[in-house]
Image: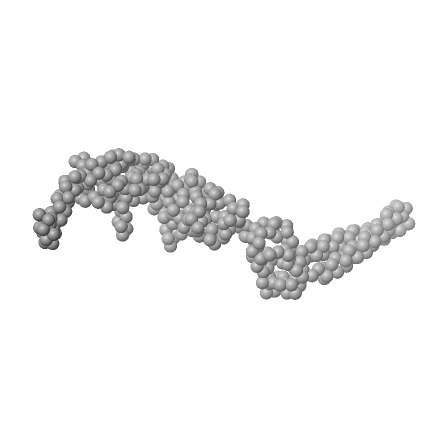
Amino acid sequence: MIYRLKNPILLLTVLVLLSCKQHAKSISEPLSVEVAKARSEMIPYTKEFIAPVSANYSATVQPRISGFLVASSFKNGMPVKRGQLIFRMDDAPQRANRLAAEASLASAKAKAAQAKQNYERAIPLARINAISQMQLDQYTAENLSAIASVKSAEQTLRNARLDESYTLIYAPISGIISSSAATPGDYIGPGTQFSTLTTIQNIDTVGVDLAIPMSEYLRISGRKTFSYDNASLLSNIRLRVADGSDYPEQGFYQYTRQSIASEMGTIVLVVGFKNPDYALKVGQFARITASLGADREHIVVPQRAVSQIQNISSVWVIRPDSTAEYREVKLGSTTGEWWIVESGVEEGEVIATTGLQKLRNGMKVTTTTK
């Protein structure tokens, strides 16, 4: 006996027979798989958008008068506060004009005082016919002219002071200030190459455009006509930044753009996000998820029951006779541990969640529910 087992051909034959016997035994035993039932749930319709972040609003800083720039007192790309001094111009010409206007006003007031005295003296003299009516009219006219001259000089002084104040340029809004092409020594102002100095973007709140195809919008909203108030259409607005982390602030509906983008056939809903720490930057792309419309009934299956190969999604349905059936399915979005199935599976059907790689069409299985 020992001699025969040492024969290579005989030994190989024994091993093949043992292998076939083991394989036949494995075929005769049904595969054990865990299963779950496809169920129906009321789930909000969630849509994902990828769009750039935009500023809440911005302000262009322009000098109101012409003159030489003396200094700028900000750092490029840094936050500034409303009312903060950001540019200072040479104020010598404006200061000289103000001093001249003050002198002219003092002179006008002196002349007005003299004209008033002459007029007040002339009134009693005219009553006793000590002076003619013509002379009284002349004193009256001189007094009124002097009063007008004072008012004109006062206005000239106000303008001079206003021009002098324009040499100090303050931030009109709070936000992030951009760089300026003008440097100290440049001649700036209207009509010069530096008619615009810089811009400030307010990003205390940032906006994101959500473009929705018009056909989808009408289906979700249930409207047959376009509406400008879509606050009730959006909920649970969330933002995810480029590194994959979730932004802590929840978004909110702001407004709907006035017109529909005809080239894309889309309606644009603008949502906002509070940005107190300036963590969101203008121009960066963000991934937005939002629930659209009312909750709708969907068929869901566990995510682990779904196989995806080359854009083909499938599940294994366990039929009532305990045999496996391969099904291609059309998937929607995910919700928790579940995947929305738009077509391919009916409510109550039993779906395999384990052993997906071993299953074959018509294979007998035993099931356990987990």
